[in-house]
Image (cartoon, rainbow, N blue to C red; front, side, top):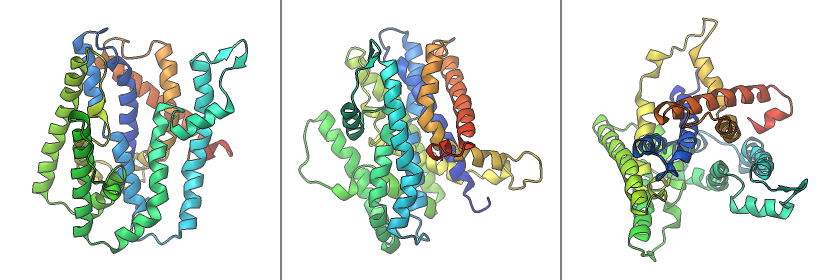
Length: 356
């Protein structure tokens, strides 16, 4: 227990909670012209404030998997990842395909209007269900982890910092120029673009002691990034007549990168032991409870859309009272039910393999 990084467990739990809040708020953002602007803004703020969750999940994976003390072989690494991630991903892809069949009216006279080929096409394209896209990012990063480990083990901090600066510069800039100026830059930087930057960033932020003056600057950038995310989404959406434009919600934009780095560093540098003692003499231990929540985070992530949609259909959603209360109530109910279901599943011999 003591060998675990407490801040990483707390950050993982907070990230899965943020994902659920994001998905509880998102449906109302598509109602720009159907609800009052104050209601829309509440949903927009909840959504914009949660956009760090998926990047931080990837950063936590990079932090753990690029640890230079790990000496396992590539075959051992892949075997563990297949059991821990790939198998659950495939099983839940089937589950959500069946869920989609029942939800989207693909049943006609008792026959399923959805073929096995259609499922595999959706699986390859990443169209099975909206939240499963996270696994595509993760599996792709797993495939290059043995290569990245060699780089991290032999690179100096200065070289890693150069890589990250190149990534922070190139990834958002290319996107901005393509989106707003409609220009595709011919110079390609395949090794320093995409989600690999978050993966390496997680290792760097965990292993580096960033001075307080730089952290303060990053926190200011994080706050500014949040404002850009919220107002930028409003500006683009209103300029398109109310059709939601999610450019500023995308994970590889400068604003989401800035917010994600700031959140990671905030959690890392909070003095958690002052609030959560390592002592476990009491019958109830907050630290043990957090570790339990952290261990259920992947399961909560994969199962929560079903719980959320059942609650929505039961009129527990952003319109319950007012989005300011409706979104948190819906999100918290989803989290509690999802956690309870996952904990039950984790106690079942075979089923536990899909909620590791």
